[in-house]
Length: 216
Image (cartoon, rainbow, N blue to C red; front, side, top):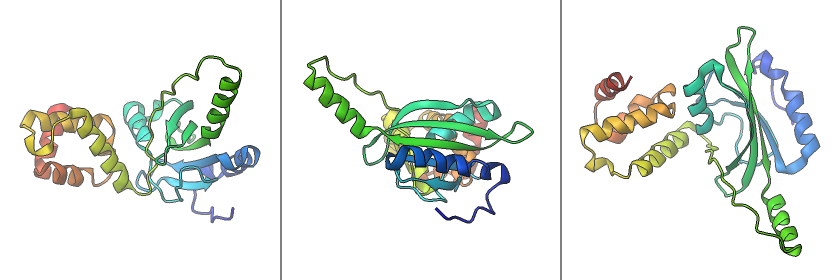
C-alpha cells in the first residue's frame, strides 16, 4: 500500500512495517491501524486491510476515548477483546499504546481480526461432534466511525438510551447527569463538544460549562 508517510510522526512511522507484516501474515480477515492520538478528530493515520471500512483520516473510537479520559498517559494496552463492527462482524481486537521518550501517549497500533467465519465453523464442528453449544459472546461494542460527528452521535444516542429520558422531558438534574455521563466517556476531550452538546440539550454553552463545574 503506498501512502505518503512523511507527515506521520516519526515514532509512529516505525510501526508501519509491523502493521504491514501482521496483515501479510493473517490475510484479508485482518486490519491493522495506526492512530496519532494528538488529534482525536482524524487520528487514523495509517491502515492496512479492510475489516471496519475506515480510511485514513477517520476519528478515534469511543472505546479509546473513554479509556484515555479515564487513564491518560497511564493507560494500559488492551490485548484481545471482542467487539462488533457496524455491519455485525464479530472482531477480536487489540490496542497497544505508543509513547514518546517522555512516556506521553502519542498514538496506538490496533489489530482488528474478523472471527465471524471462524465462530461459524466452530459452531458447525461443535454440532457435528454433538457437544454443548458455543458460549454466547460478550462483545464490547466499539464504534468505528468515518468522521467525528458519527462518534458524537453514537455516544449521545447510547447515553440517552441508557438514561431512558427524552431530552424534552429532562429536568435540570437529568441534564447534569447526562453531561456527567458524557464527560466520563471522554466526550469533552473532543473539540467542538460543548457546541454539540449545548445544541443537543437546547441550552447555552455557558450552561454546559456550569454543569461541568458542578460535576468536576
